[in-house]
Image (cartoon, rainbow, N blue to C red; front, side, top):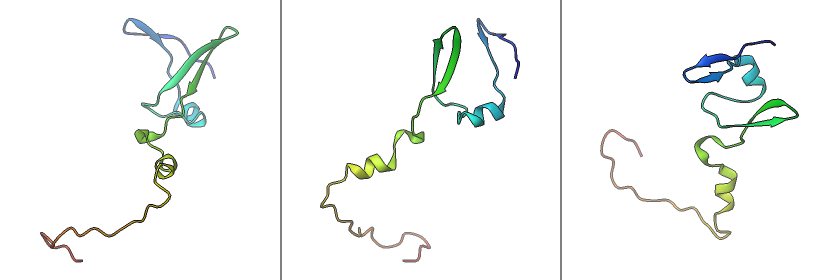
Length: 82
């Protein structure tokens, strides 16, 4: 694929096609790492879990003796059926 460096405000930018970003598993708004290696610009996704939490990490923080329990929320306020 060939593209051009373009002026973008006071900076320069490169536009990436959706197919290229999809293949690299990079999405709009994702954080990326940009480095230079042997004269080449390398753009890599930073593996941050969306929402900033990973369910496996959260569950791992639970005490071993944790027991789920039912919580009484009171009487229905509307047309809920319990």
